[in-house]
Image 1: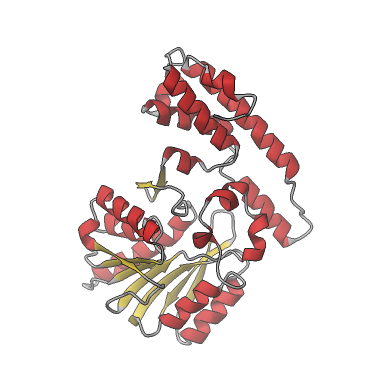
Image 2: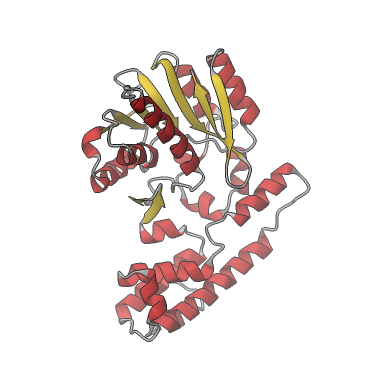
Length: 325
């Protein structure tokens, strides 16, 4: 039970409409308080990036969050809570709703509260064992899917690997959206993450075509790879304070922070890659908004003759690199 003064009234709400009104007000107050206490310094590029992070923060839609959490609690679609505000909540539902809204007011990500996140049109189970799949990473998934389909169209069946799979979002999206991919590997150092990824694979009906391997980056792979995707940790530990509270307080540090200056994991991936990819392989690697020059240098040093393409995300920030070996 929360000690927040808004909690008792919400826990006593008896209709959908009353609960939504109280929850929306609570979340708006929490959001306003956070904004006032965390105004960015826009005198630099980092300040501008912090402002963009705030604009993309998962708590910018308090009324929508209130609706989605209530729909989760009552086990009905969102339109139901909007269309029938007079419907009654049971005391247990009201308390459960107040508990979740208290957690959201404390900036816990919505995806962790409801236990699901959509990625590439697919429903993934998520919890605090894994990073929440981001819409921006769909751009990488779409590029990799296009390359896989191009190769399939030429009569080749590429061997695919997702390095640092987390929830399994990249590997499972590729497998689910392209049934002709018959050999997909997904590696992670975390046994907890792999357990959740396996659950997602079963839910999406692709478990027979995806093999999960625990270990360091590419080392567990049993064969050479044709198409490699990775969204590895790349935030520098020194930048932790600049992350939105939803991220730094709740998402797993193991999946967020890259070694050293943030690029340690990616450097080790480049070091391991030449011996584990086939000639003509394609790599799709996500990186931080200010890491383009370093990533291009690593790519050129590792694959001097490769073709490189950097793709920006919806906000215009450099997001991932395509490397055609």
